[in-house]
Image (cartoon, rainbow, N blue to C red; front, side, top):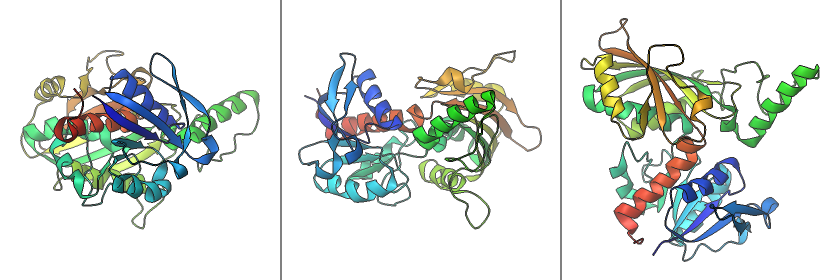
Length: 342
């Protein structure tokens, strides 16, 4: 016996990935509903290898009573309206927006990192999915933190345009094409030209000069992993369609050699170590697209601090950063609490 599952925002990039991953991982689904805004009502999307057609339903009129799990990928404003309604009807919401991440009554979960935190989900019947850049970072940090206790992290991100949705991907494609033929490359979605450029600005600016994206990485890492960790982030948008990369510098309380770190990461859940000190012996965003793992390369000691390491971390942001993590949360919820499926 399986679950009745709702995918809200099913026509967007993340929603489609949620449907793909539910099918790929053979999540025990008895019935599935694709819901979205009125703009997409009546559209058809495919689910699973059989090509089952799902007719998109209007979330405004959808009754969540009797449904078990809802995967939300509809943004904070719509989530504010619909998540409480679904939760009150007994349908557990796994939310991809930033709305509930720092709510003390809502667990913020990366299953490889803090699975036990899901036990508090019944306070609101809502579980939060972290920011895409945070998700891959904490998967990389967790096994190293367990081994040598992290004091401080400095991370620079190289985030793909898919993190800004379809509009971001369209802008990169259109600007690149326009530049080749000599047409204008005026920005619309981003603050500056993204094609053949990098933009050190994601989300809105805060009073201290950081951006909200950088703030999310700090507070979410503390909530998921350890409140004592100090973290500084610089988040940069780059002209890559899918796949976020991070250059991570870590300072530990205890000594940890690069070789020891490699051995730990090689066995860590959710991690794939690809670290050959030769040309091409590392992973780039192009190679991680469509994959589940968080890839780690270029592990090396940092001689500028005591007990320091540096590493390179790459992941498909639409998967581990969003859709995959949400489905993994649903799997964890089923194992620990719902226990409905055979």
